[in-house]
Length: 182
Image (cartoon, rainbow, N blue to C red; front, side, top):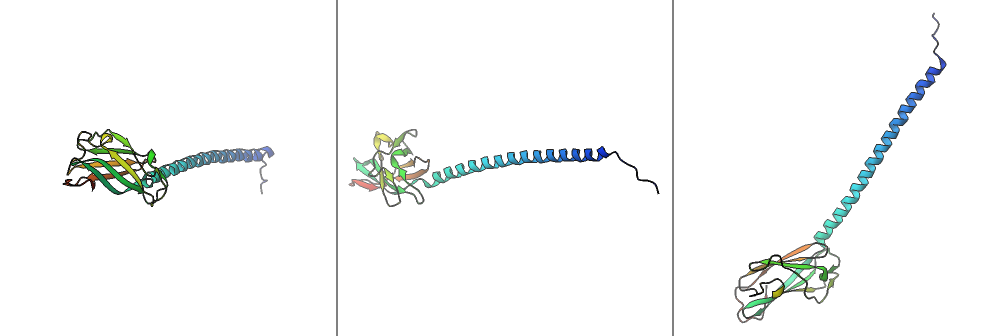
C-alpha cells in the first residue's frame, strides 16, 4: 500500500475562509436586495391606499338632487332651486365649498356659479336637506331666462371633487304658473 500523500496544513483552512467570504457576500447582497424590494412595496402600498381613499371620496362624497323647481316670471324661468341631500355613503358635505356649473343652449359654458343660498350649509346625513339656488345672472341665460321646452344641465361639484349632474327640463307650457317642477 502506498502512503497517503500529505497536504500542507494551511491549504485546507484557506479554502474554507474563501468559501465563507463568498457566502457572507452573497448573504449581504441578498439582504440589500430584499430591503430595496420591501421599501418599494411599502411605497407602492401607501400610494395605492391614498389613491383608493381619494377615489372613494370622489364617488361617495356627492350630493343627490331630491327635487327641483323653477320660479316663473313673464313666461320664463328666472330661478332654479335644487333641493339636495347627501348621497348614500357620504359623510358631511359643506355646500358652501361646492361649485355649480350650468351647460345648455344660450348658457355660457365657462360660467361657474357657487351655491347661492342654502338653509343648511353643511349636510351631515341623508335626512338633512339643503337648497342650491341658480339665478339668471349666475348661469342661466341672463337675457331671457329659461323658456318652455328648454333643457339645461347643472353640475354640482363638492369640495371632495365628486360631481352630480342634473338635467333641468322646462315644461312645454308655463302659462298661469308661478312655480313649476323642472
